Length: 246
Length: 281
Image 1 (cartoon, rainbow over the protein chains, first blue to last red):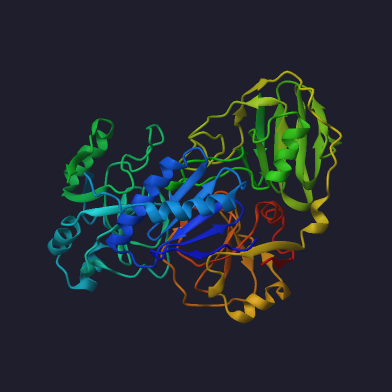
Image 2: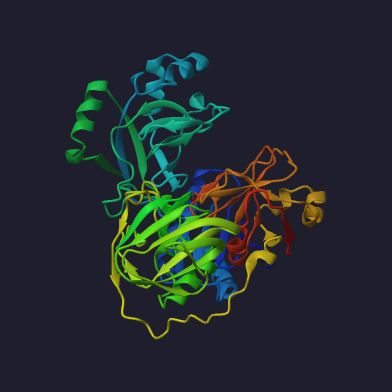
């Protein structure tokens, strides 16, 4: 099957992928304008095509919509062209901000000392830079509950390790390139481990299994090793703090 | 109930997949070779998409603790029921106490055991497909007991389906251009079908690693959505085909796409066997 391509006025590419999916593609920069626009289209599509959509997977600059059937995919392509040309930029209404406790103690941050040494940063400076930002959740991927965040201070950017390690512990907070994130389960990984959170990012017994939603904001808060242990031992009772920001 | 004496190389409960959660990073999972799995379901009169046992290669050993109607489909295997050779691709009746073993594999990788009973394993996020961090266990292990609920014998069960033998079609897989197809060197785009590929031994339900001459590159893309069948092109120049347990986003150019029916074939190619990719533009 050929990839149908047409240029949208706001330069959003739209094309059929495989048998039953359509991909919307913004120019490749992770700007906040793209983020707002993509969020608007994502939310609108999720509602307008709820009955036809099997899965809708957003990312930094693309949204892949997998439909339940390949039938009428060319008609859907035409409809989506119209829909995106009429979608207003996502109204930046109130956003939920989640306060995630992170322990930066060397016991839980095996790569932090080397990281700071290489960057000529004090541990204190590192923690200040990492905890002073509101990180936006662009999308989830890689592992169930792994959120892709934007907003990491440039002074904390560091290329991934040349070789991934086979077992990154669940809850590890890490930096890879220009990104920071939390490993929601144990997995292999190539990011630098700079902290750990006691809370669960993905809980299959909860509906939805992820507490945060695409478009929400994550804020890291430094906790001591004692606080980490206290929260971890009482994780059932721990309420993740949240604020509503305008 | 069905007792797992030995799960063999890798066995798990699979259905047609877990949909509606890929935006949270949850893989779609489900049958590797949906064609053979649905055939097994059809033979025992089950609805398409029903949960069954999927087994890779050999070693699966089951004991049945009640009477069942079964159908074993997929890979061309040598299987025995209480020591008697078993026919694949047709309905078979087993009795309480019978034992089934897959001992040898000639062609293919994945076998499917359709069961004329409801498989009562846990359903998580709308699917019974086993996957680590979603279901309590990631695969079947020795000693597992699979509870079932017998279904009334369906009149639609059909033991006389026409079965196509896939072994002679496994040397040629049709592919389409993926979203980043144009990143491939022009010469490679034009000569793709002349290249001999095989499957690396490390391949699994997440991804099939292809073996071929490497074409290193420095094209990067911003992390993008990926679906089963997409072939990613790693910087060292390798093709990796995303399978059913693959992640929902990835950072390598998505240069090719294998359509569903072709992916059902690709997953059945044994490591080391040669095949070619036929590009359908």
